[in-house]
Length: 612
Image (cartoon, rainbow, N blue to C red; front, side):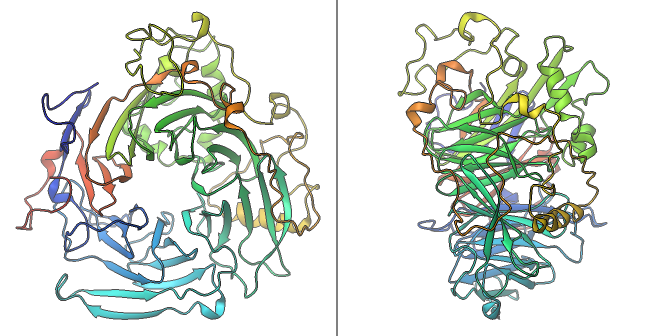
C-alpha cells in the first residue's frame, strides 16, 4: 500500500497520493463550486452529483460539467487540467423552489455545440428535461399536464455574479400521478435518443419515452412478468403513454442502477441489501447477491462487463462475477458507508495470448468506453474461456475506486490471483480485525489468502432461482414479444428496440422456465412482488452472501482522507480523477504526467473549500 506523510495526523486532508503509475495531485485552480465558493450547508440536503458530456466541438474544449448543490443546478465549461476554472461565467444556473435536484444525466448521442439534452430528477418525484445551452425547459414528467407550466424569472445576481443571469424555477408541488417519492437515479437507455429509466425511493423504476405524454389520469398497469422479489408491469391504455414500463424491485428504496457496457443488462442495488441483475430487453433476472449487512448504495460495471462492484452500509466493496453469478472478493478500507464505486478504464489492463482478445492499450480502452453490441456479444464466450482450466495465460488488473461518508478515497486493484482462484493466491490479508461480526481464521496475520482446503474451489452455484440447465436449454428465444405475452407488450418491444441506434438484437437469451408465471391478463394487484422477506442470518454463508473468510479480502492500494464532508462523486477521466463532497466542491486530481499541463490561473483569489 502506498504511504504518505509519515507522522502526519490521520485526519489531515491529503492533496496528493502515489500509486505504481506515479503521483496524483490535487489541482486547486480546477476546483468547481458555487460562484461565491462558500461551503454549502449540507444539513438535510440531497447528495451533490456531477455529470459530464463532451460536445465534440472544434475548439478542443468540448467538455461540459453539471452539478447540483442544494436547490441549485449549475452548468459549466469543464477545463480539467488544462486551464483554471472560471466560476464567474456559468453557462446556465437554475434555482428551484418547492423541490431539490437529486440526480441528472446527459444524452451523449444527441449532444452538439448548440444543444444538449439533460435529464434532472427531483426530491418530490418529478423528472425534468432541459437544454442548458439553449436555456430551455422542454418537458416535465410525473406531473399533471395541466400543471406542467413552470414560471421562470430572470434576475441579476449582482453580488455573486455580476452581469450574469440566473433562471429561478418553481416546480409546483401538485399531485404526482406516477410516483410521489424521491428520484434516486435517472439515466438514458444506452443507444436510445428518447428512452430513459428513472428509479425512486419507493423501490419502483419507470421507463419513459420523451416523445410520449404522461396522461392526465393515474396510469393503470397490467402484469408483464413476475419473479423472485420483482415484478414488471406495462401501462394499460388505448394510446401509448408514459410510463412504458413499471418495475417493482425488492423492498425499500432502489438506490442506484447501472447499465452494462453493452446495454443488455441492468444492475440494481436496493435498500434491502440485494444486488439484482436483469436482462433489460427480455426483463428476466440474471443473478442476485446480498450485502454482508445493511443496504447497498452504489453499483458499477467493469469496462468489459465481466464484473460488478457494489458498496453500501456494510462499509465494504464487493466484487461479483457476472459469468459465475457469485461473490469473488470483498474489500475493506472504509470506516463508514460507501457512497460511490467506479472502475478506472484508463488504468485497467487485460492482456491475453489470444490475438482475438483486447489488450490494455489506451486505444483499446477508448473502445471499451463505447462498447457496441457487436463487440459485447463475445462476452460470454470470453468468460467461459477464461474460467476454463485449459485457457491461455492471462494477465489481468482491474482498477476501481470508492469514496464514502468517511471522507476517504480508496483505490483498489483486482488482479488475476483473485479472479482465477485456481492459481496460488499471494495477496496478504492485512486487516485481521476487519469485521467484529465474524472471527477470521486463526493465524491469518501475514498469511496468504487461500480457499478452504488450499485447492481450486468448485464454481459456486448460481445465486438465484435460474439454474444453469435453463440457461443452456434450447427452448424458445427470450424476447418479450413472444406468444406468451400480451400483444400490447410487443408494442413496447418495438419502441424499446427499434428506438436504439446500431443495436443488432440477436435474441440470444434463452427462455427460463423457472421464472415466475408470465401473465397476459390485466391485474389490479400492482405489487405482486414475492414478499418472502429474506432473513440475513439464513443468507449468510450461502452463495448469496459468503462469510468473510470464504472469499478473498482486498486491501486498498491507497486510502486517503480528501475532504471534510462526506464524498458523493467519483469519476475517472482520461487525464484526471474527479471527486466531490457534500459541501459542493468538485475537485480535479491530475493523473501522473498530466499536472504540468495546467495553464496559469486567471483568477487572483485562491480557491476556497475543504481541500487545500
